Image (cartoon, rainbow, N blue to C red; front, side, top):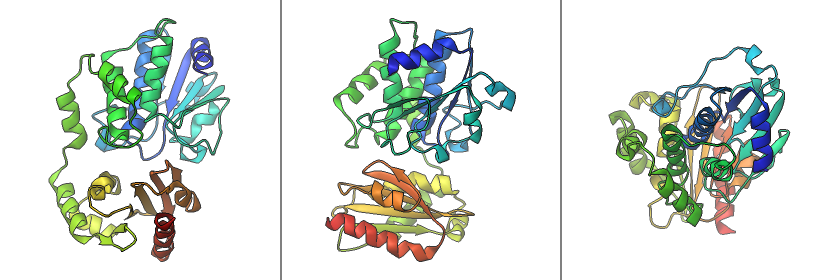
Length: 311
């Protein structure tokens, strides 16, 4: 599949790279990392990265604003996006050919070519795999591509703490740090929190609810977010905050947005992506997301999470 993708890349003059809505570092890292590899390897090609920008990730990359006409005869690649409905910028279907590169369970096999590896820690890891495969076939790595891929791997492994971290993950990260970028600066940008988010962090640790089944929940209404001056995307940065609590098996954050309540699920063992699918979402076995549209649905999500922990 890597060879087929490389063949397609070589055939097109314009390549447009998408990723998922509400991006995280792996979404930006894989999208931008692939773009920078292709720019270094094929300077004659036009490479775009598109989607709605997430201000908290501007330190990683700024995205391109392009007209619909740019998609005519273009190759479109979507990184780190399990379901077509979660692709950021719905114009992805305007290109001539569509490639999906992802590491989530392949429940929506969209695209003309699909490369899905659920054993990969991140799509950034997969993009580095792609580079290693093609480095004797014309692919070149740049310092900026290395910075982005490293950030994506670090972000999706929780700084190498998550079970998805493999020997390959450490090997790739070890190779990427030999390129010229500041890891100290990158880590500061990734993990320093503004004071309002730190105060919300304290509120979360004081106010989360823990049940005997090892299930914990956090609810954050629009009014609470407004009180702390924190956006829903900033609040989502705190989802891992409960992971170090003794006795916890799985937990969920309910974060209210204007038109929905985001459901952020995390687990130390019980499989929870089936629950996410039940509520219009999906993800990994131990990290997934979904959406509900009423606070009345919270109890049913909790009961499903308790059942998963009991199983």
